Length: 183
Image 1 (cartoon, rainbow, N blue to C red):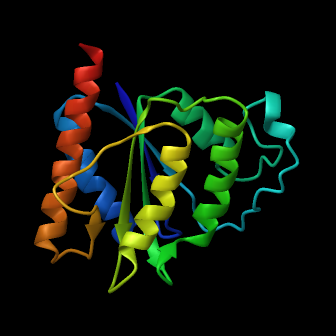
Image 2: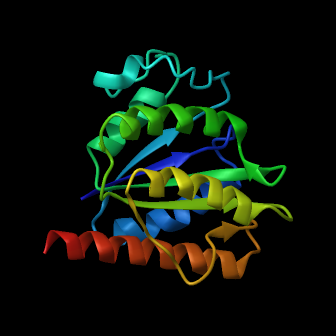
């Protein structure tokens, strides 16, 4: 069993990474293999609907992590995408990549169908539910199964006791659902 964790922040050691690590700890305790992808801080191109991906399940643009994410999702049992919240939404670079990932993986077939999925948002004040909603729409459009926790999957930093517990529970729930699918 394998889960892909995508850090949608340009900061490799920021709160989004910390939030994903809380989920990761629980997955590892349950013997789930983890693969990490960092979107980094290089410029990315948005989907141009060129339809090059139509029969290839890959994007024509190969200068960022888009095709790596497609391959990792295709070869895993689930994905968890983390994002910082910028102006009540996910990181714009992450959205540009996810538009291409899910267009290639879903519009011309259902490459990701029935895989488990969850989103995590890190926030300073407001906008987390809007960011989670945007990412979850990629999953539901792709007929993926959303994994939930005891509350919204939001993390506000090191002193956020409630957020830490919510993300740990997300990891527990994700592992449990993966194991139930294997049985």
